[in-house]
Every structure is written in C-alpha cells, then in structure tokens.
View 1 (cartoon, one colour):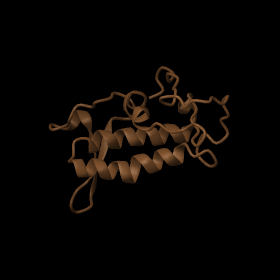
View 2: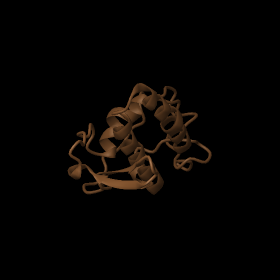
View 3: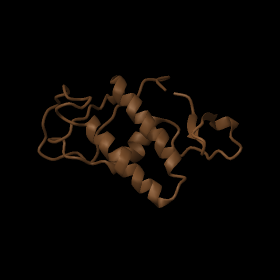
View 4: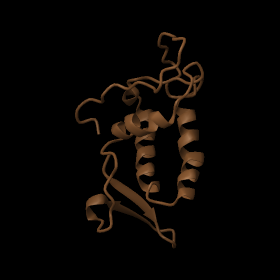
Length: 134
C-alpha cells in the first residue's frame, strides 16, 4: 500500500497527501503494517486464544491484511495528536476492529483451528510476510 494519508479539511474536502510531498510530514515509527503489528499492536492486544482466533499467516487473508494496514496507518496519524485522540482511537477503532478480526465465530480466522494449549501465548504469533507483499 502506498504511503499516503487522506485528510479532510474544515470544508469536508478530502486530500490525499504523499509522505514525500509533505513539508511537515512526520517520519513513520514503523515502516510496514507487519512491523507495527509485531512490535506494537499484538503486544497491546493480548487475548485468551480460547475466546479469540488468530492465524500466524494473517497476511494470507485479504481482509485481515487490509484491516491491519488501515489500523497501522491510522495509528501513525493519531500518535501525533493529543491523548484524547489516542483514547478515542483505542475505543473507536483498535479494540472493536481487533475484536471483530479475531472473533472465533465470525471473524476472519473463524476456520483456523490450531492445536489447543493450556496456557495462552504472550502474543499472537506471526510469520514473516513474503518479500514484496507490501
């Protein structure tokens, strides 16, 4: 996915801004959605695998890849805002979307059935995405 943000001005006009074209653009914390997922998102989203489903090959699910990339891009934007924006992002986007993504009955990974373990893992595992995936 390209490194662009969509902004909406006070007149509700949208503008696509390329990072390279922005004079005031902030440098990304994470260079890919995969990096963000492994280093930030999954450590902040630890759930009981008996109640949530996750596939280490998450990138093979088109919906999961799109959603995770969107969450990463929105996180890169909101981290520059104040604390209230971050709290709203968790409430309105991160938690509901991750809960929906990992819903065992109707989430993206509903058919994934790994061997059961007694202890939940500290984070969901991931496999490295193929070269050129993003």
